[in-house]
Image (cartoon, rainbow, N blue to C red; front, side, top):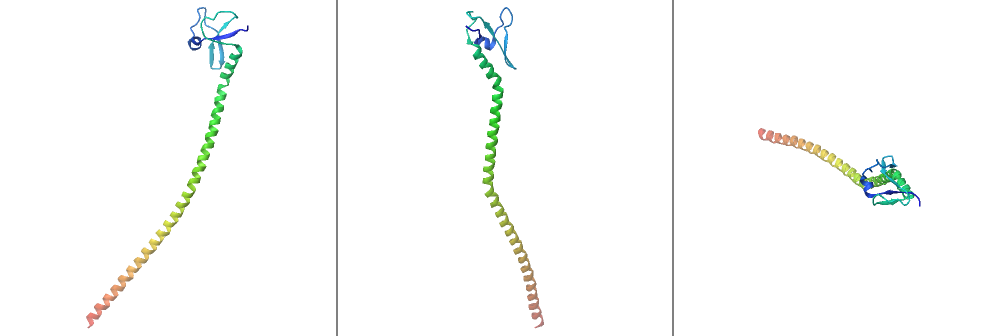
Amino acid sequence: MTPALVLTLSGLLAAPAPADGPSPRLQVTPTLSIAVEFLEAGQRAPRGGYFLDRANMRLLIAEAATAGEACDARIRDQQTLCATQLAAAAADCSAQLAPLTARISELQAAEDDLVETVQATERELGLWKAWTYIGGSAMLSTIAYLAIIK
């Protein structure tokens, strides 16, 4: 039988130090080390827990060591997906905005034409008023002159 590691649930969460000194630690990742107890074949476990053989322990260590890279890969994938979705949303907004911008330009041109027409009409009205006052004054003067000389 091959030697194996025994990780107990209590030992994994908060293992009390054995009376003969601290238990050895297994460096899983640069930031994670766990207390381990080595048991010889046939030796009785000091407390209940999970039995991990070396192959499973290697899998656990490999998973913990690559977890950061996997997380970085997921972040990169999410960034790519978000950038793609953002570009699609921007294109959709531009497509929706194009007819509105064209309509605004048409309405602005129509408003400019109407403003120019109103200003031209006001100028003509001013001239008509001036000519009406001049003509009315001339007629009134003529009538008054004819009334005086008779």
